[in-house]
Amino acid sequence: MIDYLLTEEQLMIRDLCRQIADEKIRPMAAELDKTEEFPWEIMKVMAQSDLFGVYIDPKYGGMGGGVFELCIATEEFSKACGGIALCYSASALGTYPIILYGNDEQKQKYLPDLASGKKLAAFGLTEPSAGSDASALQTTADKQGDHYILNGVKHFITNGGDAETYTIIAMTDKKKGARGASLFVVEKGTPGFTFGKKEDKMGIRASSTRELIFNNCKIPKENLLGKEGMGFIAAMRTFDQSRPGIGAQALGIAQGALDHALRYSKQRKQFGQSISSFQGIQWMLADMATQVEASRALVYASAREVDAGKKDVAMHSAMAKMFASDVAMKVATDAVQIFGGYGYMKEYPAEKYMRDAKITQIYEGTNQIQRNIIAMALIKEMAK
Image 1 (cartoon, rainbow, N blue to C red):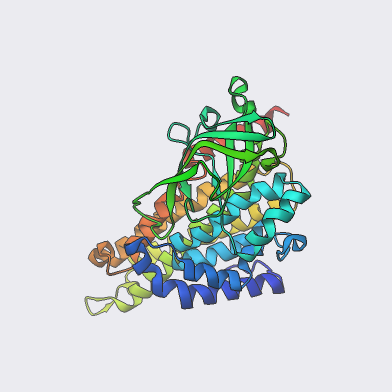
Image 2: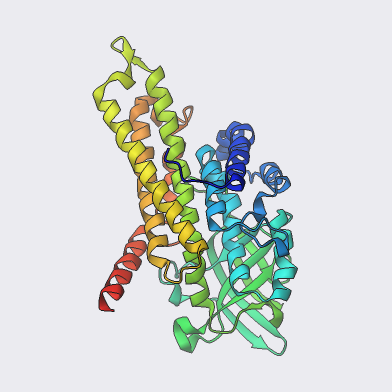
């Protein structure tokens, strides 16, 4: 692994997360994948270790790091289980809109509980008919006096039902299209806010995915983050912050799959020798390792760019998410191949990495959408 010159604090975060991954996550990964049980006990361990606050300002109870520190933690957890890691990192996705658009009073109200891990967060953008086309949102927020009334359904929401704090994009003026979207905080238990069934997924099964249902859900006007009409911009800026984190999840999945494949290739004997001695396997391992390291370089670089406060980070964030997730799927598939018939069996770990890898190419914008973002940024730059 390349030396990325991590600080003493970053090394401490990495080593702590690695220890939790080895001692708490790995022993439970297969069972939680089978039962689809939300990993509350593991979340408590992360909370007790102050890991939910690595990217939050100390003023609000955090450690004062940034996206890079979040990526370090997510990568380590994902090496052991992409689903359990997602329960952790998805809370950051729901928290970033508050960090980016909340006023000090809102931050004081919500961030300390999120930084401590006392509460988890979730982000609600996707709807049954609005996925990649976020401008097609149907959920509405009608202002009535000192309150907003929310109606609509959010779909495929990670941490849905288990999170306590939700940042929601809803239309305050449909006539304005994307410019009519606004951003709100909605708390679990608010009358009119309920949840749909828990989705039965191919991978990341320890992570909960549910519908959010708003039926005349009344929230105070103080729950508006930023100004009306800023919702779409807020969502895109949130993704600029969070996409390196998806890259880190994919990176961890890829590294975990590679580690298992390498270990198995040294143990598995054929024709009187370990299959790691065969050139065909060696070339596969070499390609897998190179792709993983290239992913790490891009994810780390894009995260550091976000933390440095660079304005135009959308292209590199999209690259990190796209490249790392494509690599995760390729490396996980190759790991199954190296395991041979055993790779197809649930008794062995390879098939789970393959199932978990797939979603990283889909959520927070499919990789086809990421390619659109990258191309448009290139064209825009050329036009200057």
